Length: 386
Image 1 (cartoon, one colour):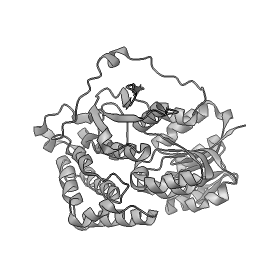
Image 2: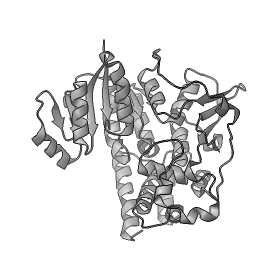
Image 3: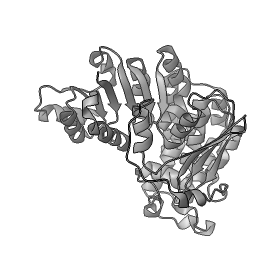
Image 4: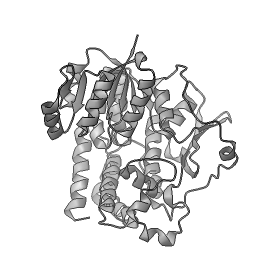
């Protein structure tokens, strides 16, 4: 029997990688749903190729344009994630949620009950709304697998393991500025910040990697997903990006999870969970294993990591403030309105404001709490022109 699949955000890099994996064994899968925001042309090509009957185009203008150009009567196009109840007559075996940003939270929450397994590659949803997501996962008895290479590695290391975890280390490449002298940080240009040494990524996440904010977010994700205290989580710089996570157990055993810098590896293994299906990868790189070059983070170069010393252990709306503020300041940098070093300066100035401190002890009770606060933070930043 074919494994049924739903992909939210199928035109993004995660979605495209998943589709490539599916195409290699197309007879094993039946894709029930694909979605995009604006890229209706790519979505339509995917739907025709995979014989998908249901697609969602979230952007209204793109949806209307797609309707006019539609020439395949077998494909039904929707303009809302509220259409899940019309699309799914029973649970799909596997859902990939890879819509970027906070826009991915609502559809992720809504599709959980229609899924047997959900793989989530949307860090903002986990950071801001994990208590809501985990509640839905438990309520509907859904299997959850994280997709980010670091969190997948932790999940893989502790899979079926009942031994207590002592501590977990996430590795960071150090981005394009690991070796750059601090004195030159103020003169960093946009094109330089976008040149990640190991990964090919979108502009926003490339900047987050350059500032190390991406690793801050991954620590927050790990804390939430695996219920590990911040004091037991840390970051080590590992320029080769070969080791993705290190887990130390209370019985003295230490697991290092390594794989090539290719997102197809964690994606493949979320799809083929507990099934032996080969994937073509490089041979073990002895040179990299002999030269791990692990080191502590230089907080003067990457001050964003300091925020981890003062985060609440319980899920709170404060995380929404962090995500929203960082989003806006990165946008300003990419629009050439502020300098690279201004990203963290303005970020810390905002998150330290008295009006935002109260959210450290307030947990989100609904998605509306998160969206309302996120919009307020963004409005606050943009109304001041910074």
